[in-house]
Length: 168
Image (cartoon, rainbow, N blue to C red; front, side, top):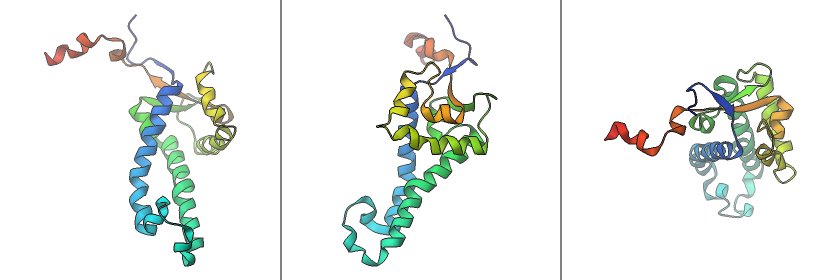
């Protein structure tokens, strides 16, 4: 059976995990030089806190901003403006509102991002829920009334020989 190029399905656990790994890697590339510039090796846990006695409050504030607030803001902005983070885009996925089928609004994207906390709290069960749910929704998706959709490309169903024909 050949899939249509514009057909979509719910994105599964492994595809979404792959997107998360890509996003985390990209975020690390973005923040590691900044964290090192601001705090040196201490930001990577290379020294104890007593090495920076005068910088306790600024250190914790900047760490909170780089580790929690900036990623939250970036994710919400990507979902709201593009419907996906870079990792999801590379994995041919989009976050959509269940009612509209369109990218989430600012409030819906913010609720989804904050609901990650609920998905993560009981040993990540809310994220693993994606593997069992019929619509592949994590708890954060259910709370925000969103789903992650995956575009099915024709090449996924072609044999390796068919894919290599243009190069022969």
